[in-house]
Amino acid sequence: MIVVTAAGGPTGTAVVRALWSRGEQVRAVVGSHRPHPELAALSVEIATADLTAPAQVEPLLADANALYLIWPNFDPDEAAGATALLRAAARAGVPRVVYHSVLRPQARSMPHHAAKDEVEEALDASGLAWRVLQPCAYGANLDRAVADAVATGRFASAWGLDTAQSLVDLGDVAEAAAVLLTEDGLDGGTFEAVGPEPLTAARIADLLAALLGREITAVDAPPDGPVPPPAEYAAHCRRRMLDHYRAHGFAGSPRVLEALLGRPARSFGSHLDRLLPALATTSPDGTAGRP
Image (cartoon, rainbow, N blue to C red):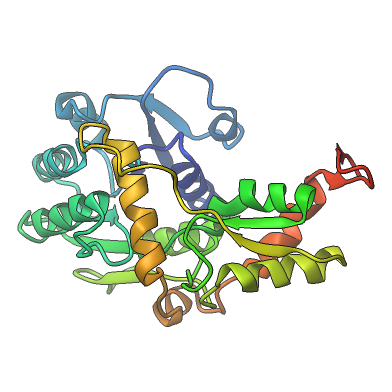
């Protein structure tokens, strides 16, 4: 049995699906009793627990062969909450823990990265057999901006026009997670999951233009106003993240991911190939219509 936390989100669902496709038994831990049709369709066990309450989670780990620890994104409780779950996993005797971190958690200019860095430190001191997956930003994060570009001919980049991101495919991240959860010889390893190409906004616009057969222009769309205060944690983190991306980009090497997968990483272009047929096309009068 492999336990996946925060399984109702996009990452958790993708990891559960990757494990299910390998024939693994999965317990998908979700935070509420609302329907989760994507998980229900896989016929996996669905359990509800509050991740900030280790006493609720610990019984779900008693028969686990491995734990994939995802914490909800931009949550101020991650450092303390995930560390408490590591203690629960140790008490339950979980033989393998994989933590879903982020590329460059040591980048202290982004508070949600720093929180993951704290959890990685706690993991190293936990006494557990562990692995860490450090994904780059997902290509799917730009789906709304891509849809707007299809409709308007303008690809708006909140991270500016000069820096690049090595966007990674969520399916690749999920497959890498499945490898780390099921294969031996990887304990104590920290594994980056990075897409194959550093992408500027102009490069993304060019990819879209080639696929659509019409001009797409990259435009700078800097965030408005001052940085939200730390008390508005999610908004504060998003803004600090975008400011970091504008200054430094968020790029890396795909070689570690490709070694885990045993194949090339999926390109952002392949993501667009899957996404564009589902998007509205733009009619001559500028309104959106279905193809």
